[in-house]
Amino acid sequence: MSSDQLKNIAHIQPEQLNALYRISRMLNSASYQQDLLAQALDMIIETLQAERGVVAAYDSAGNKFDIITARNVQKDSLQNLAAFSSGLLSKVVKENRPLLYHDASVDPSVSQYESIQIHRIRSVIGVPLRTGDDLWGVILVVSETNRNAFSDENLTFLEFFANLVSLARERLQRLEQLEDENRLLQKRLESETPIPEMIGESAAMQQLYQLIRRVAETDATVLISGESGTGKDLAAQAVHRLSRRKNGPFLAQFCGSIPDTRLESELFGYRKGAFTGAASDKKGLFEVAHSGTFFLDEIADISPALQAKLLRVLQSGEIMRLGDTQVKKVNVRIIAATNRNLDALVKEGKFREDLFYRLNVFPLRLPPLRERRSDIALLTRHFIDRLAGKKVTVSAAALRKLESWHWPGNVRQLENVLQRALILSGSGHINEEHIIFENEKDSEHHGGTLKDFEMKLLKKRLEEFNGNRTRAAESLGVSVRWVQLKLKEMEEE
Ligand SMILES: Nc1ncnc2c1ncn2[C@@H]1O[C@H](COP(=O)(O)OP(=O)(O)O)[C@@H](O)[C@H]1O
Ligand SMILES: [Mg+2]
Image (cartoon, rainbow, N blue to C red; front, top):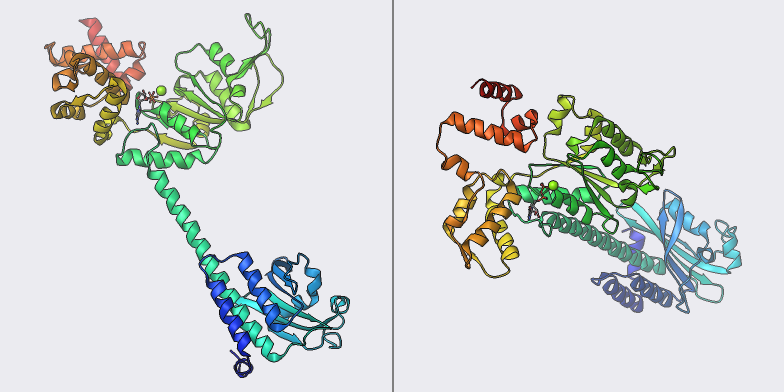
């Protein structure tokens, strides 16, 4: 505070001090609002016997002013800065200090401003608004010829007011910042809360929920991997439902073991006469899914030709119907899923590397059930309530049995085992003996040598994978070479 200011404080009249006190209360109230600033400005105009006043924000990048609030003696809001002389506003900014003109119309440093003459401005005070060294605005108070001429003491009064406004603004900004932070925290909290329909509170699942929520906000392509029955379908639906495409369609296409031409015509559609049987034009699913999400399930199984076509969709967002010559733009978010190790398939040259990278923009890995055994109790409760339709209890021993199984079929298998247990129990209580796993009999009751068991298991897996040795080997955790050796042994016996 300058010595001039100190000198002037002594001369500030009681009614001005009173006004300052009331204004400080006003601007300090918990909910700072625009109209409070207008009311404060009304009090300034009244106290100084001025004609009008403005609180203007200064935009240094564009070198321009925006009205925060502007009032006249009739307590009207003014929308136009023209009544305030932009020359004077700029002068306060340029000189970065308070300015007072007792009689502006004859003062050579400002009398040339057109607005001074047009608006018959007699006396004017301009005060910079600062937070630290940052000049963020200007307050200007104007008196016309038939009103009061301002004094130095009025200037000091207005400087106090300017300080109060700056403090109030700072407080408001801090409040807003806190609010933003709060929203951010809220969001983070939200991302750790479960997704409806997806049961599980284990750390692995919470991490998954968080990733699902994050990626749902974007349009990024998602590649979901995980063993069969781990909830890949559910996860794909969750991504869609939590995205801004949620009101658009969600379409899924199973791509495993479907003849190539059929899959292609499903996905891309065709023109009449494109092939025998194409009696009329047909839209492909990519088109039907427009503005929504398209889920390509079991993506690993598609042919090289389809892989190339899919790559084009992902690169350009364009599709072409079979038998057509024109491309169409489609707006779909793509989610793909596989229970196989795509990375390994790429290395073996069975899956296009470029397509893999296009799909794998955002990978989501669903943990197998045996990696989150702590969720088994919750899932059991969930499925039993859903399947039984009445109150059914589960013994501690039964639950222990469930929790110690290795669950090769994951959640889907748990669902099946529980369904069977409900039927077997018949009553309202599930015991240990009602819990039966599909493969248990094979391994426990049939006896035989380890070799017998090995062969039996291998045969079963080969059946499961339609004789595909690579996949059977993959699922058994052995090399293809091992499978070939065993098969040879079998033949020789
Ligand atoms: N976290 C989960 N909470 C509740 N049900 C689940 C969960 N994960 C899977 N399921 C259920 O298990 C079954 C298999 O899930 P699905 O999404 O089809 O698995 P995937 O596509 O990986 O084979 C479905 O009935 C599904 O509702
Ligand atoms: Mg599935």
